[in-house]
Image (cartoon, helix red, strand yellow):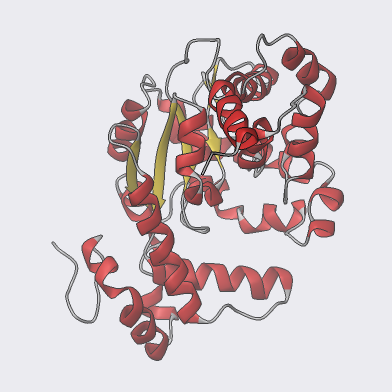
Length: 324
């Protein structure tokens, strides 16, 4: 049976459009992880470096990359895919639409890697920086897609004790949104599944796991390791990230009603409240919160579904204490 010629044409087009005309730049940190795992904390630390700019959560990279799979792709259609992506962070980025389109029109040929670089470069230039990074936790599920489109992407997977993730997530839902908490079984399944999925998609040399607890309790050595991973010279400004955190997080408030509530997600004001702790230095009392705040039955339920991974990652469980 003969192959589908249209499908073959599309596959060739996609392959060509994933090849850049511009050589890759220096390693770009892509901070991913299950929500409430410290991704914002690390974003602000790296963004405080005088060379590095990391925008608010974008959410549009996979749809943007997918737009290059159309038989006919234009700068306008790429921008349309960006804007129509669920929870799109285009507005929050503050990148000028006409400048973005003009740069895409100048690409010969128009391709996904260089289009991605255009967006991030324009964002970095707005902040007087020469390097870029990215922080969207949900991209923990899109590592392979992004890695295939941007050779310089280096994935930093923030991992936090899943029981603390569950507590923090449900507290945010109840206190900020007035919604019901997520069942502990669902939280455990999601936490376990996303971590294992990221590990399956990881490529050696392009993937680094960082425990939230280590970043909080042993900040400088861990942060130096992260900087080395993305070939970023050490700068002590990263340890003073909290001094400018409130100002950096104000981007979340940009047109937040259109970018937030109408899309069924947190508004800018709510997101600011959710990340209020980042305006202070790392706090040790935000680790192992589950020991005091989680119901024993919920602890048992979580560990029954994800206790093996908790133990593997070095977290204390009912079956075995954490390694000393």
